Length: 283
Image (cartoon, rainbow, N blue to C red; front, side, top):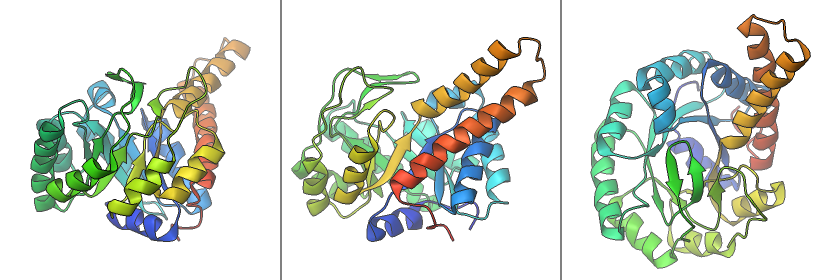
């Protein structure tokens, strides 16, 4: 229990036909809210930070917050570097104590992505840390990371990529995008099934904020084992803060807004855990 790598929880999810909710956190309040939601629903959970979030504070600051809370948690909690952009950043996260990392070479050529990912995997294995990679592109913008358009993942390339890199989990492009969708998302959900037939490691769904519960559930049924949520947690947090100060402009104690924002994020996380089907899986 408590602070763990997500390798077992993802393999258990793959075997059990559900997914692990992976939630991007920006501050202490969001860390507390995500773990509180997971404990209430007895669900294993992953907390994530992006490169820009790390710049906002630091790897060791977020590790300290998450590990301190996780060590007292009643459910498995993992800390994941989301969209690691370079070997040095990923290696630093591992050395600091992150229990999972992602190297995102999806903007590079296939061969460069293979080489970049393989280098990270070889280093991470010496530390016992699992690695997520991305093949194909998830469009939209997340923090400082922006991708123009989407490039869905080719199943044959996915099979070769996994064999050559030895990666532990794979984020695939099926038409999702980071951030909220400007229109109705068009997902190639059949791709999940096709890739699952040729790839035996857990598959990851990025860009879940704004997708319908039905779409997420179908992707999970087809083989997705990890689902990332980011934008809608930020919106829940800031909307609660805005509402408080609009209705009570004389409030000056940040703990008051923090408590309301934590509650809003906690309820959002609980609803996403239910969609993932992971409630009760952390007992």
